[in-house]
Length: 233
Image 1 (cartoon, one colour):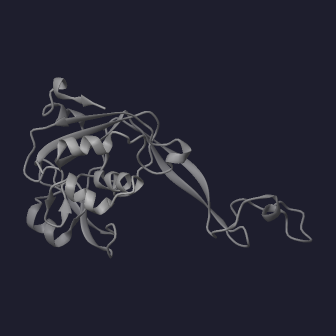
Image 2 (cartoon, helix red, strand yellow; image 1 turned 45 degrees about the vertical axis):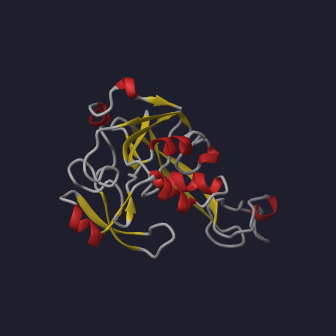
Image 3 (cartoon, rainbow, N blue to C red; image 1 turned 60 degrees about the vertical axis):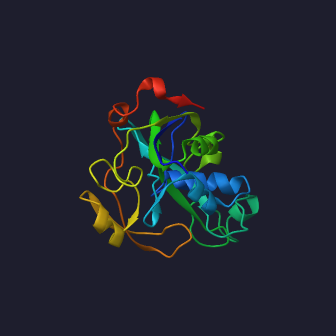
């Protein structure tokens, strides 16, 4: 594998909902399983592994964005549908059954999620540029609630970059760019981290340091990536 510093810019066509810890390697894992491949093995073919984690950052909105709220009704009991029968008033009562009722046969939960309207979502990594570009070629949406139209990707810009030590795992100032186990983080980071119980994929929850910043200034990468080098897919 060639260890190439890479900057990725997802140009968004709709607001996106990002889960806590949404990362580039999570996008790759999803794509791998969607193609019938081993998503975990795919990560080792795409990204350089540094310590216990891959050099693939979290997904960061550009600094200029608008936050809104979206509400969804989620059933807590599998196999129960919201239909006329389950919404009928109980016997002897005339009041209509509340959709956000949290008890009874139609128990459900109204969930409020944060939507982000941003021109683009950024990520950066160290790995095989051609393999990562191929993996991203058929990504049409990112984030959660994709079936509801959120997170639609209009275009993906991929480019080589002049990286720094730990590019993809660490920010330029040495702070985490993704979740890093605390013991490992104390050895490699300088500042700007706080600790959270973060459930890493397919592993028991463990204490990890995570990025303190939630956005990225695109001018940081514009200095590293001349416009002529951007590759569009």
